[in-house]
Image 1 (cartoon, rainbow, N blue to C red):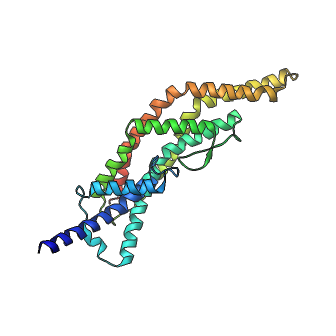
Image 2 (cartoon, helix red, strand yellow; image 1 turned 135 degrees about the vertical axis):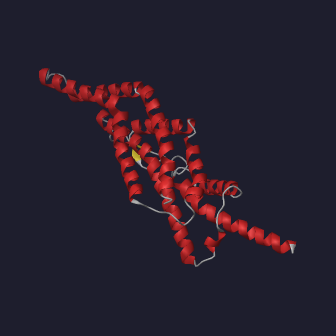
Image 3 (cartoon, rainbow, N blue to C red; image 1 turned 120 degrees about the vertical axis):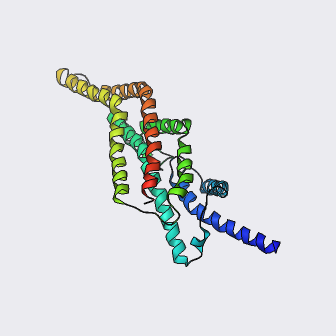
Length: 263
């Protein structure tokens, strides 16, 4: 009967939509920029639903995954959450490097107490870290970095069937390499301003010993802030190609990480 066929098709599509949502929603909730705590949960839910509806006629999923016991569906959801969290954590290493670099430069400038709220991570960071973080977000969106996540998401249904996540030693090695490169990138970002502030501190120390009449604590603080802001501004020209290079590297490594988790 046509009514029965229509009802069967509708139920099949709903089940397929639920399976797609189990992968789309965790990735969107954890990914950089969109997964920020400052983005309302309602917006994330609507965006996840919209992406799942767009992917529904594109990807093929086995609706029999939902025919088992509730424990099986719980394991399916858990594996998809782990997949989204793994990809997002790997990508967030780049933004975490910006945060670390800004925090270190801010402390050197004497702005350790002048913290502001970071909308990306929901934590307190220095103003320099906030400046670099917002710049990195604009660069990420300007080069269509968010498209990288959506393309990896679509292709992941071919690499990793829902519920078949395979975490190997190579996956953990990749995450550890991403974390180690985070600190290398942080040093590269802070190098110009950090070196200038280091020599400024050395100069202030020499002056304090040779001319003790100068109130170095009063003169040094605004001097370090001025030197820091000058070199932070000058380093933005160096910051742009550096971040573009690392975002392009991330676009190449993220699909490889996803394919590695497919077994």
